[in-house]
Length: 96
Image (cartoon, rainbow, N blue to C red; front, side):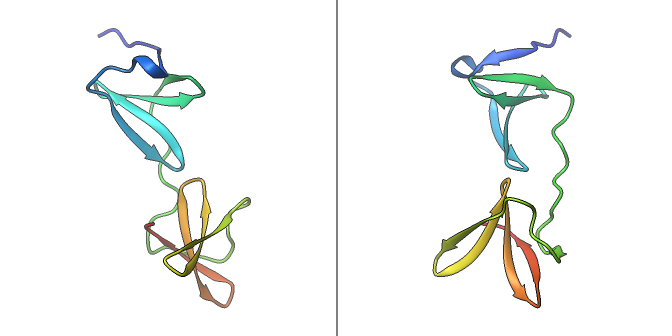
Protein backbone atom coordinates (compact mmCIF):
# COMPACT_ATOMS: atom_id res chain seq x y z
CA UNK A 1 0.00 0.00 0.00
CA UNK A 2 1.32 3.42 -0.96
CA UNK A 3 1.33 6.01 1.84
CA UNK A 4 0.99 9.66 0.88
CA UNK A 5 3.61 11.63 2.81
CA UNK A 6 1.66 14.88 3.11
CA UNK A 7 -1.56 16.64 2.16
CA UNK A 8 -2.12 20.38 1.75
CA UNK A 9 -4.43 21.58 4.53
CA UNK A 10 -7.13 22.63 2.07
CA UNK A 11 -7.00 19.33 0.10
CA UNK A 12 -7.62 16.65 2.72
CA UNK A 13 -9.72 13.71 1.55
CA UNK A 14 -13.42 14.01 2.41
CA UNK A 15 -13.25 10.97 4.69
CA UNK A 16 -10.38 12.42 6.80
CA UNK A 17 -11.13 12.43 10.53
CA UNK A 18 -9.62 15.35 12.48
CA UNK A 19 -8.33 14.59 15.98
CA UNK A 20 -6.72 16.67 18.73
CA UNK A 21 -4.18 14.69 20.74
CA UNK A 22 -2.04 16.38 23.40
CA UNK A 23 -2.83 19.75 21.91
CA UNK A 24 -1.79 18.82 18.37
CA UNK A 25 -4.20 18.41 15.43
CA UNK A 26 -4.00 15.22 13.38
CA UNK A 27 -5.90 13.91 10.39
CA UNK A 28 -6.64 10.19 10.35
CA UNK A 29 -6.74 9.05 6.73
CA UNK A 30 -7.03 5.39 5.67
CA UNK A 31 -5.69 4.30 9.07
CA UNK A 32 -2.65 6.60 8.88
CA UNK A 33 -1.95 9.65 11.05
CA UNK A 34 -0.97 13.04 9.62
CA UNK A 35 0.19 15.84 11.92
CA UNK A 36 -0.84 19.39 11.07
CA UNK A 37 2.21 21.54 10.40
CA UNK A 38 1.22 25.02 9.26
CA UNK A 39 -0.59 24.67 5.92
CA UNK A 40 -0.16 20.92 5.45
CA UNK A 41 -0.63 17.57 7.17
CA UNK A 42 2.52 15.40 7.30
CA UNK A 43 2.58 11.60 7.74
CA UNK A 44 3.72 10.40 11.20
CA UNK A 45 4.09 6.83 12.46
CA UNK A 46 1.81 7.41 15.47
CA UNK A 47 0.75 10.40 17.52
CA UNK A 48 2.27 10.63 21.00
CA UNK A 49 0.38 8.99 23.84
CA UNK A 50 -1.56 11.34 26.03
CA UNK A 51 0.66 12.26 28.95
CA UNK A 52 -2.10 13.26 31.32
CA UNK A 53 -5.19 11.13 31.88
CA UNK A 54 -8.33 12.56 33.50
CA UNK A 55 -8.22 12.02 37.26
CA UNK A 56 -4.42 12.02 37.49
CA UNK A 57 -3.12 14.26 40.31
CA UNK A 58 0.06 16.26 39.70
CA UNK A 59 2.13 18.48 41.98
CA UNK A 60 3.28 21.00 39.40
CA UNK A 61 1.63 22.49 36.33
CA UNK A 62 3.43 21.98 33.03
CA UNK A 63 5.57 24.90 31.89
CA UNK A 64 3.52 27.48 30.02
CA UNK A 65 0.14 26.52 31.54
CA UNK A 66 -2.36 29.36 31.10
CA UNK A 67 -5.20 30.26 33.49
CA UNK A 68 -8.68 30.06 31.91
CA UNK A 69 -12.02 30.89 33.54
CA UNK A 70 -14.89 28.65 32.46
CA UNK A 71 -18.33 28.74 34.06
CA UNK A 72 -16.95 30.69 37.02
CA UNK A 73 -14.17 28.16 37.72
CA UNK A 74 -10.46 28.73 37.15
CA UNK A 75 -8.69 26.04 35.15
CA UNK A 76 -5.17 25.83 33.78
CA UNK A 77 -4.54 24.70 30.21
CA UNK A 78 -1.35 23.40 28.64
CA UNK A 79 -1.12 21.78 25.18
CA UNK A 80 -4.75 20.74 25.24
CA UNK A 81 -4.64 19.34 28.77
CA UNK A 82 -6.91 20.90 31.43
CA UNK A 83 -6.07 21.09 35.14
CA UNK A 84 -8.04 22.11 38.23
CA UNK A 85 -6.43 23.14 41.51
CA UNK A 86 -7.38 20.87 44.43
CA UNK A 87 -5.34 22.77 47.02
CA UNK A 88 -2.00 22.17 48.73
CA UNK A 89 -0.22 22.89 45.44
CA UNK A 90 -1.85 19.93 43.71
CA UNK A 91 -3.86 19.79 40.49
CA UNK A 92 -6.13 17.15 38.97
CA UNK A 93 -6.42 16.52 35.25
CA UNK A 94 -9.97 17.14 34.02
CA UNK A 95 -11.93 17.10 30.77
CA UNK A 96 -12.85 20.61 29.54
